[in-house]
Length: 200
Ligand code: GRF
Image (cartoon, rainbow, N blue to C red; front, side, top):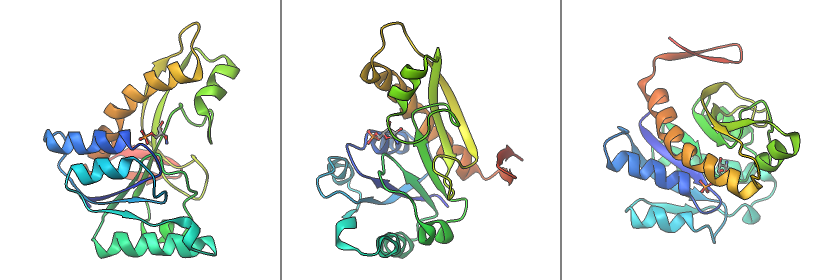
């Protein structure tokens, strides 16, 4: 399982956190491939700079959308990836990926789920007026941002926060949380009970 495939769409700061954690021996894993659906994603450069194979599998080149998922699955399987990490991957994960990697796809989300799923989680949190938000790493299922929760960390909401200032504070916590959650997954002492991720 410790061969990772990281899927991105943008700047890839969480990808960088995984690269750094591996480099610092805080995470015993190898990133086998970085895949972006967006050709211009700056995260691709982070992968290349770290000497990792990077691929762009542009969703615009595939129709219907399952074909795109199938191409991603093929690329991951060819590289013997055991755990898929979504890191700012702005695509819904379809059945081909879910079937190929059961309980082996992680996502990181900038809120304490189940509060504020979907896009713009930080703005949703501010609009709601919560005093505490945070970060969630969860297993990806067919339910958007709804799979078993591996790890959560809290982040206080400050008076005067904007979506950007809250996002920046949450991001610092994300960069700690993602490698920690991957470590938990790779350690393997866990099971899924209903919708719960339980340490065994
Ligand atoms: C992060 O806030 C993550 O929680 C969300 O998308 C953002 C990606 O940031 N899923 P980055 O591309 O990893 O910098």
